Length: 347
Image (cartoon, rainbow, N blue to C red):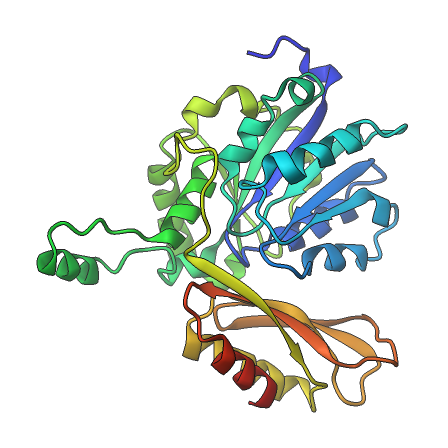
């Protein structure tokens, strides 16, 4: 147990959740409603191109400066704690004017528990406390069975091979993120009816197995007073936060791959979004996000996709020297990269 008073330590909020759950959207709303509170943000992404950090930098929120957003890419915080996370946190708290609160947005494939363990390091433990772990859940994805096993298929596989040790990497990451939560944000609730939402909440309560508050949200719009100031001191409560990976400080992401595709200027938004949804369906992709240019438009097109569900906005002016776009593609290991790139570029 840490004997340093919590009131003297900088509170840290960890926002976790699977790919496309709405973590960055929730964080943008939180920053926009922070009313001048000095908040530093650490953004971690799976892949070499940082989209979420760029999205936050272009948010236009008063008081949200580039210096307050630290971006870690091409890695996963649960796997790179010593190399990336600890130096970043030390640099933040050693600033002449340190932040009043730090928010960490993990990658959608990160496991929160190894990150929580890092707050036990002596020089971090006496200066920071984990105010709370917020797990954002994509309600429509859960309702569609994205993280559930096909029970019949699994039993058929086991009938053919009784020694089969079934592994569902999507389910394991999703469940580990839930099991570390102090607060669960059930997001995108406008896309489901009350009965479906109630069923998901029942499943969450069963899976977590300890009292955890579940809040429904649309676009992550929740009062910052609910999200900040939980007071969990989660680093002192590791034993209650079960994990599929307990006993291991690291885990491999061999089940998932990501790559970046450069795409030409698009003739129109509708056909582009239709093509993205078609490619996502054909190749069973988990996530696509990035930026592009549309003929006749001076603003940059930002797109975010979960499975075949896409949203878009024109977020800022484009430069005149380069109107090509870049998309991050995330899927299961073994994706046909060449075919996906061709489909995205040529339709």
